[in-house]
Length: 211
Length: 211
DNA sequence: CTAATAACTAACCGGTTGGTTGATTAGAGG
DNA sequence: CCTCTAATCAACCAACCGGTTAGTTATTAG
Image (cartoon, rainbow over all chains, first blue to last red; front, top):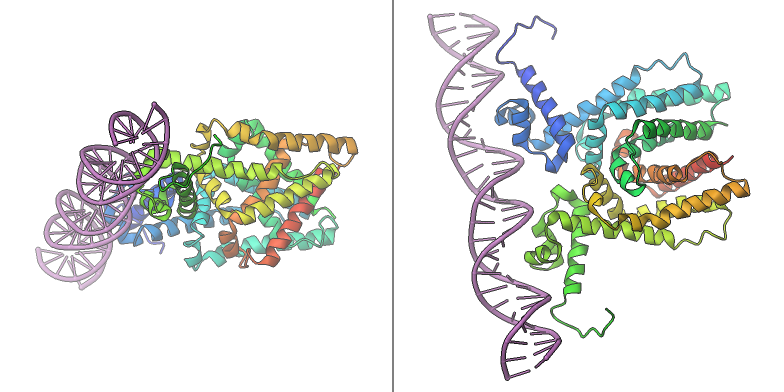
């Protein structure tokens, strides 16, 4: 797997990677039904057949992209060094990480939002999705356990719900910022508003988990 | 406007209503790009041209449906009798109302989620959207004002943010329940889980707004 | 009754879409 | 140098899709 890689004009891995990148961009921008296979091929600078050759069809390509993007999120989350922090502070650190990741990776929330409108039909077929999330589950469970021990976290909240609510507060704000801007006649995407929303999220979670 | 209505075989209002209902169903089920104009016409049991005759094109039809659905949400919200409740309890009543409305009207959250993936391009063109939301804004502003007076609500939270976070906690959970079920290997839509999430939302908001 | 108009219809159109065919070529192993 | 396989391509296709044309019928005002 790790042998020498002489530069090849025909390189399956490079072609696959180009298709994945182009597909991520197109799917995130236009949604599954709005995305055009021809547009992906052109953006990837690859013949359209390559896309069917390596990924089967439009659905499988979407599923592969989604899994990759989801996995990347969890990989970054797993890299956080939370052990040296008090558990309650570590949870707030997770709030901040999640928020920053969403902000830096707008494709992620758009692809996931799209997938949910499709009732997660691609994720449901992914055999890796369980493994991708194992650390995510263990991490919060351990933080809550330690937080109870340290006396800074309530014992009557399921770890799962903390994860969901952290995601909810950040994800909803960013994915719906366009209609929020219209509804509340403000610029939800200005640095000031973004900063304030992060502060609000941390405040909400902090007060919620406190015993 | 309110003259006698003899039963007509050709009735513009009935036809428009049939198209609106069919369009709401199709757009909510398939999304804007996934929805088919022919399917809407067939579901409405109406010739396709009627749809272009009364609504212009697919985009305008979507915009009209979205505005109607959004308006209905605000109309129901405005009907709540909150004046006789203490302000903090009234806010929790709003949490419960929002949750129940989302649950009863799955089309609403799907259409709105779709619209946001389209960057709210239809809502941005609606001249009525401001008027539709006026009561919504005034209602929470008044509750917070009264809550501060009654000593049950913090003075350092903008009313707008309470509305946004109430929406966030409920909307995210329901619209993303399919990927949440996969991620957390549970049935997010079971009556038990739904009931527990409502309790969690109320707990979160209650602790957040308390001085 | 009649003319004007609003409600409605069938058939059609040009461009697009996901997916395929059949052939060509570069590179690795022997 | 030769062969076999995997990588690549141009051209193509049938179904579909949003939107239109040209014309018919019901309703009603006068």
